View 1 (cartoon, one colour):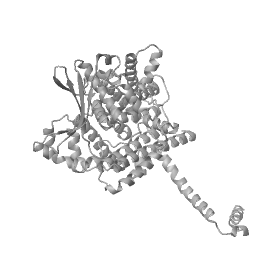
View 2 (view 1 turned 90 degrees about the horizontal axis):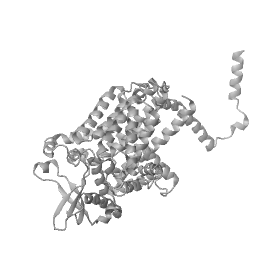
View 3 (view 1 turned 45 degrees about the vertical axis):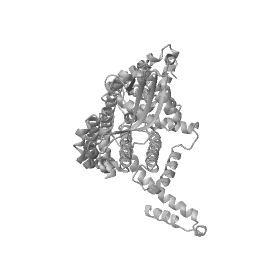
View 4 (view 1 turned 120 degrees about the horizontal axis):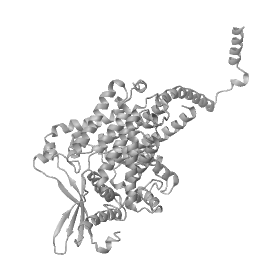
Length: 204
Length: 344
C-alpha cells in the first residue's frame, strides 16, 4: 500500500469520524436540552448551548442553500451518519395512532386505519404515523394526513367526508395492566376532508 | 582516528557562541515545547497508523458482501407487495413520494431520488410504473451479484445508489434498518473488492486485495460500531425507563412491536429492570470489551443474542439481520490480535 494512498485514507478517516462524533454528540445533547432525561433541569440551557456548538461544527449554522452545508448533508446522508443512534432513547415513546372516520350520505360511519397488504411493510407505515406525529409544521402535517386520507377514500369512494383523528396511545405500566388498566388514546389533532371524483385525476 | 573525529563533532555541537547566550524568549520556549510535543506525537502516530492499517484477511469482506446481498433481497421482498403503493407519486400511493423527497432534499439536493430515475426513464419513453419496477429489478440483480461475487464493485455501487434513492424517497417511513443498510453498503462500496471467494477472482481472475487496505476498512467498520453502541447506550442510560424496566415493557407492548400478547409479556415483568439495565450496559461497554481477545467472544455473542431477541420478540427481522451482519463482519471473523494489544 503506497504512502500517498495511506495519507488519503487517513484524511478521509479523520473527516468521517469527526462527523460521526459531532452528529452523535449533537443528538445526545439535544435529548438533554429538551429535558427528556435524568439530567437536572437547570442544566438544560447549557446542554442547548453545547448542542448549538455541535450543530455548528457539522455546518448547521450555515444558511440552507450554502454549498458546504448541502455537501456535508449529502455526504452524511449517503454514508448513513446524518443522525445519531439513540433508538428508543432516552425512553421508548408512546406510539401515534391515526384513525379515519368515514361518513356516508346516509349517516353511516365506518372506521379505518392506514394499512398495507403485508405485515412486514407495517413497520414503515407505523414509522410514517410516528413521523407525522412529530411534524411541528402544521400545514405539512395536514398535507401528509390528507394524502393518507385520500388513499383510504380511493377504497371507499362513496364516503362523503373523512375525518382523520391523530392521537397517541398511552400504555399502562405492567402493574396497572395486571390490575386491569388498558391503554388510553390521547387526542391531538382532527382534520375533515371532502373528496369528489374530480380529485381522482388531480388529488393534490 | 574515528574517535577523534567523533570528539570534534561533539565539541562543535556543544560549543556556545556569545550570541547564543541571550535569554530564551517565550516564543522560543513555546517552540521547544512544540518540538517536544511533535516528537511525542511522532512516536505515537506510527502506533495509531499500525492500528488503523493492520493486515487482515478478506473473510470479513466476503461475509459483509453476502450478508448485505441477503439483506437487500429481504428488504425488497418485504416491500414487494406494496412497492408501488409506497413509492408512487402524485397521490396515487399511500403517501406521495414527492412529499418525502421534498423533505429529504431540503438540505441536500445532491441526493439521489427515485424521481431522478423516473425523469431519466421518461427520456427513454418509460412511464413511472415501469421505472419503479426497473429500480426494484436492478436492486435485486445487484443483490444477487453481491451474493455471487460477480462484478462486485459495480454491484455494490448500484445497490448503494438505488437503496439510497429508495430511502430518500421514503424519508418519513425510513427507520433504523435503512440507516444501517446504508452504512453497510457505503463501506462495502469503498472496500477493496473483490475478495478471494468471489466469482470475480475465481472466474475472471481479478486480483485479490491488499491486506492492509482490507484491514483499514474492517477497522473503520469496527470503530463505527463502537460509536454506534456507545452513544446508543449513553442515550438510553439518560432515561429513567431503561433503569426501571419500563422501556422494555413498552418496547414489547407498543404497536407495531406487540407480536406477543401483553398478558404473556406481563408475566415476565420481574426481569424488565435487569433486562433494561443490561441492554444499556452492554451497549455502553461495547467499545471497551469488544477489543480484548479475552472478552470479545462473550461481548460479541451477547450483542448477537440481543439482536436475535429484538428480531424475534419485536418482529424486527430486517433490523436484526443487518446488525448481525455488521457485527459479524466487524468482530465475528477477526483473528487479528493487534487491536487487542493496543487497547488491552
